[in-house]
Length: 268
Figure (spheres, helix red, strand yellow):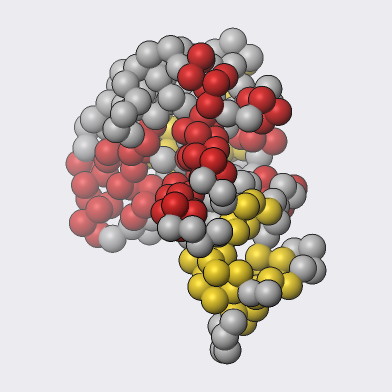
């Protein structure tokens, strides 16, 4: 029998849809994504990009404080025991996403940890094929797959995700970990320049790492970066290693010249 509602995606939009649908007795089914190496490398594991951030200071209802007891009481114990220790400074990205997931489940949402790899919307009910080969029919499909960040693909980068490596300047730039410290932004397009410009409000200095000798960003954005005294553009350079340790997290990066192959370390 066809499902009333199938939701593809497990970020905030997906779980919000599930909460509303389940409270309306539509018995929604969420495909939250598969736990695969490919998804890990792309940053598209279940619970979305917010699960890759550290403290969340800008979500209403979670001021700084100790939430350990609340998390222990609210979340399924088998999932709670797999989470990182609570830092007692408000809610973290992974904690917030687990709470959203649990809230949807509490109202009757069903969850499958699998990817949808093919959708046939030419006729109703719609047909969805998962990575495991299962075919699901649905009268309504909510696509809440969001976006994925572009990472460099370095092993050291993966090691320090949530500990100094971030893919969201607006989400993390104002956190104490980054404030009044040198930061590194990798890229030369509009997105990179916009992030660098935003971070310059909080950082002591922003180093914009670009592999070429000219920014790909629009002229107005490029000039804005060049004119910003707190942005230093590191031309003809790529990041080959993220430096850090278990106590401090990220402490810097190794840059390699695209012109002569020389390397140097930069604090950040």
